Image (cartoon, rainbow, N blue to C red; front, side, top):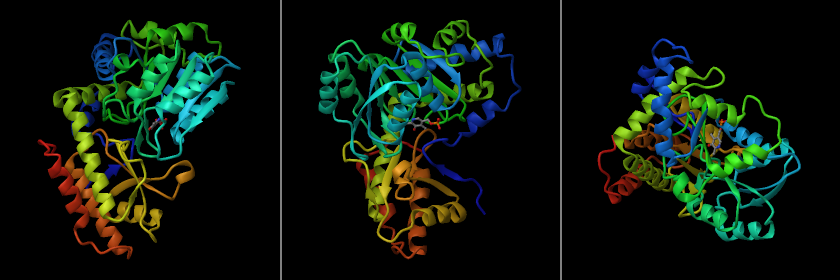
Length: 388
Ligand SMILES: *Cc1c(COP(=O)(O)O)cnc(C)c1O
């Protein structure tokens, strides 16, 4: 009997019981005082987590809609843009820009490697006229976190540019300081570290981006940031928002602040390190470069002879553990364990235990307890406080 699935994909993430209960209430008028009260709490709460005093915009769509809104508001047809990428979500920024008629100058790092600040500096030097730079903070497809603070510094030092960052799977789960690091647009989505269902994209938009927005000439209507800003200032949105999801985001934010952001970030890091240690002990090869491994998703190549889809089906059917496979060109070649939002040490132990059992059943490796032992050693090394 599987009582509850252990949902360990990098979004959507599991909903804490508190969030489920917060959403279990009648809907309210999205232009009335009840919804305004929700907006009056979540807009400043989101700004705090994003580390910004700039405008916070909410759109009803998935994270990709948030990314598309940035392109629609900032890019003009025929304009050259720089996209620095190292995986599938970076490729999405390339495709989006092309869909809007931009001329894309792509700086592509090998999958599993970060975008190097020196490479970015070189591309920026070669293209002084280019105004827009797109980056992915946490590349979910490869389980890699770019050094955003350094990359943003390189962009800032290169002149008057607008830096747009996909922070969908990072903001709220690891440090991402929009104002302090000099980011102009930072985007996230409700179903990742925010512990809410899919349905709302968050875009923080700074002054340089607004300046660019006022001049950009791509068609936009639903995604028009200026209309959004005007309504959000009044505690509403131009079109009907995902009201129920907003209730969930409100409760998720309360939980993040109760735990304390520093502790939230530490919990993610400690669990990620234990996950990496466990998978390595189980015979997997970690995919992301050492020093850049993500706090929210761990990617690994399977041991010889292991069929990733057979492993994933067995985990799902027999153990109720759901992990992700590879994306794009890594489809079928990789496992990815999501550990963001509502995730505890206990959740990770369950995942690693199930993987160890499944590997024995698939005749890959005896279940000798080494996977859990390695995770346990990692946890002990990091001397964790309560992480239940
Ligand atoms: C999840 C994710 C997105 C958005 O995906 P949606 O399915 O549209 O919500 C974008 N970028 C990254 C890095 C992500 O992890």
